[in-house]
Image (cartoon, rainbow over all chains, first blue to last red; front, side, top):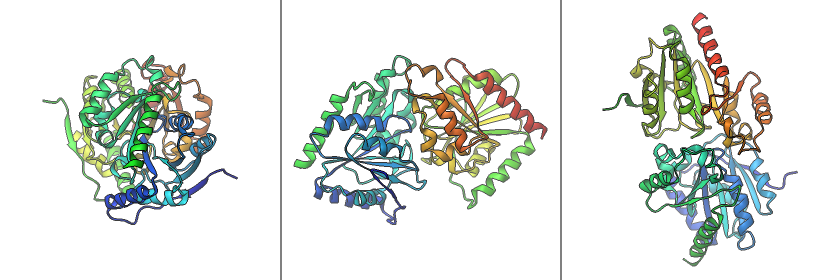
Amino acid sequence: MKDFKVIEVKRSIFEDNDADANRLREELKADGTFLLNLMSSPGAGKTTTLKRTISMLKDEMKIGIMEADIDSDVDAQAIIETGVRAIQIHTGGMCHLDADMTRQGIHEFGTKDLDFVVLENVGNLVCPAEFDTGSTKNAMILSVPEGDDKPLKYPLMFSICDVVLINKCDTLCVFDDFSKEAVKERILNLNPNAKVIFVSAKTGEGFDEWADWIRTEVRNYKNS
Amino acid sequence: MKDFKVIEVKRSIFEDNDADANRLREELKADGTFLLNLMSSPGAGKTTTLKRTISMLKDEMKIGIMEADIDSDVDAQAIIETGVRAIQIHTGGMCHLDADMTRQGIHEFGTKDLDFVVLENVGNLVCPAEFDTGSTKNAMILSVPEGDDKPLKYPLMFSICDVVLINKCDTLCVFDDFSKEAVKERILNLNPNAKVIFVSAKTGEGFDEWADWIRTEVRNYKNS
C-alpha cells in the first residue's frame, strides 16, 4: 500500500495550450494556491532540493508536491517521508507536461487548501520549456557537473525561468572549469530578469536566499 | 568563417520512422560506414568523451562527428580542433533526431569514405530513445553526478542501448552515494546484453576498454 496516489495523465485535448494555461492560472489564483513549475536535466537534484526546501518551510505554509515522471514512484516516496502531501504523476512516456495534464494532476491531488505547490516536471531541458503548464512561476535547476555552457545550448529553458538555482556548488572543487561568473552572465544575457541563486542541496549553502525568494513570492501572490 | 558546415534539418516526412531507419542502415552498410548514435542528458560529457575517443582512434580509422544541437555550434567547434571532420546539425527546436533527419545530416556531411561516424544526439534521456535514427549501434553516457537511480526513471533509454558508459568516475569521491554495483545491476535488469563501462573522460580511466569495444564493433561490421 503506497502513501501517495499515482495517476496516469493523458495528452491534452486542447489545441491552444497557452490559453488553457492562462485558465489554469486563474483557477489557481482563485484558490490562493501558488504553483511552481520546477524543471531540470535528469539528476540535477530536483528531489533533494525539494526535500531541503520542505524542511525549511513546512511550518510556515501548507506545501504539496506533484512528482511527474515517465514511469517510477521513487521521487514521491522520498517526498512523502518529509511529511508533506505528494502525488505521483505518470506521463505515459511523454517528455513534458502541458496545462491540461497539470490540471488533471491538480484535480486528483486536491490543492485548494495548499499555499505552495511544486510541480516537479520531467527531467528534460528541451520539451518542458515549450509548454506553459499554467504555473504561477517557472524555476529550474542547473547543476555544476552539467557545465557552465548549458545556457548557450538550451537557451529557451533559461529564457522562460523566473529563478535559476545553480546546484551542487559543494562539488566546485572537482569541477574546477565551471565558472560561476560565466554561467550567471550567460543566463542574464538570455533573461535579464532571472534570479540566479548558487546552492547546494547537500550542504544547505544558499538555501536561506532560496527560501526567502519563495516566501516573498508566495506572500506577494496572496496579497495581489 | 567557420571550419564546419551548419545545417538545419527538417522534421521527417515519413510516417514510418522504423522502416526508414532500416533503409538508412542498409545505405550505410553498403558504404561500410558504422554509425554510432550517442545519447545522454545535457552535460554528461558527450563531447569530452568524443574528444578523447578521437585522440585514441583517429590514426586507425577515418572518423567523422555529427553534432546535433537545438541551437549552438560550440560542440562542433570543439571537435574540429581534434583534427577530424565534423558537421553541426541544428534541429530547429526539436528534442530528438529521427532517421530522415539523420539522413539529411549524412548526405550533407558526405560519409562514404568514413569508417566510423558518431551522431551526437540532442542532450535528453527521453525523446531520443523513442526514435530509431538508423544507426548501427546505440550508445549512451550516464554521468556519476546524475545518480545511480536513472535506469529506474528513464528505462526506455537504457533498454535500447548496446553500450552504456558511466562517465565522470573521477568524481566518485564527492558523489559517495553513487553505487557502481547498483547502477550496473539496474541497467542489466533492463537490458541483459548491454555492455557497461566505467570511464572518466577527464582522466582517461576505462578508455582502453571503450576503444576496444569500438575497434571490435567496427571490424565485425566491416567483415559481416
